[in-house]
Length: 357
Image (cartoon, rainbow, N blue to C red):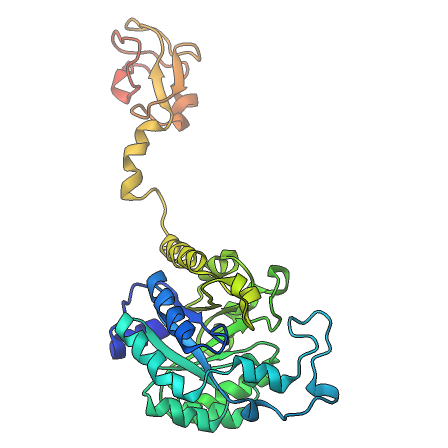
C-alpha cells in the first residue's frame, strides 16, 4: 500500500520526498472568526506543512443540548471542565459556509486542505468540495457506519486509534477496506489533551502497520517536537499536530497547539530524522572516506638501520592512518627491517627483511 504522501503525489502533485506527511490541525482555534481561520491557513502554509485540516460538525451532530449529568464535563483535569458538551462543540465548530473559503485559501497558498467529518452530512458537504482525503477522529473510530461512509468515497483515509482496542481497530480496518478504501493510515493517538510523552507509547505505532498491513503514523497531542521526531524514526508516514498562531489568544485547543515557529521547527526536525534513517550501511560513507587518514596506523618512530628489530619503542600505533593497520602490530614486533628507514615512515610490508623467517 502506498503511503499517503506517495498517493497524494500521484493525485495532487505534492513532493514525494520520503518525509512524513505533516498535517496542521486547525480544529477550533479559529475562535469563531473566519478572518482568523484564513490567517491560520496562511501561517500553516508558511511553515511548509503538507496539509491544513479542519473539523466538520455541528453541535447537534455531536451531542444533545443538555446540561444534566454526563452532558457536562466534570473531570477536574480537563481543559474544559464545567463546560457542557453542546456549548463546547458550538464554540469549536467550523461553520459549513466557511469551508469553501478556507479550502480556496489553502489552494491559493499551495497547501492541501481536508477535514475530519463527524456525520454522513459532513461527508456529503466535503465531497461537494472535492477534498483529497479524510480523517476519522479517535473517538469516532468505533463509529463503523461513519467509517463505511467515508471509505465509500474511495479517497485516502486516516483513522486515529486513540483508546480503541485491537478488536475495535480491526473492525474499523475491515469496515474501511471492505467498503472501498485502498489507502489507509492508522495513527497512534493518546486521547488526552494535552498528552504527556510518558503516555504516548510510541513503540505501539509500528505494530499498527505490522498487524493490519496498512500505513501508520502519529496524532501528537504532546507539546514540542520531540515525540514527533521520535515517531519519524520509528517509521511514521503521517504526523498530525494542532496548530495556532498565538497560544496566548486562547482557543479550545490552544494549550496543546504549536505556534508557527514551533511548527516550522517540527518540519525541519522530522525531515532531518527521516533523512537520517537511511539504509543499513557498513564501513563508512563516501563523505567519511577522507576521515580514514585520521585513524591510527603503524609508523616508524625512530630512524632505523637495515637489520634493526621492530620494538614497541620504534613501532608506534599513531595517527594518521597511512600505515599498516594496528591489527598487524603483534606480528611485526620482533621482525627486522630490510633497509634504512627514516622516522615518520608509514609501516608497510616491503620495509621488512624479506629473508627473515
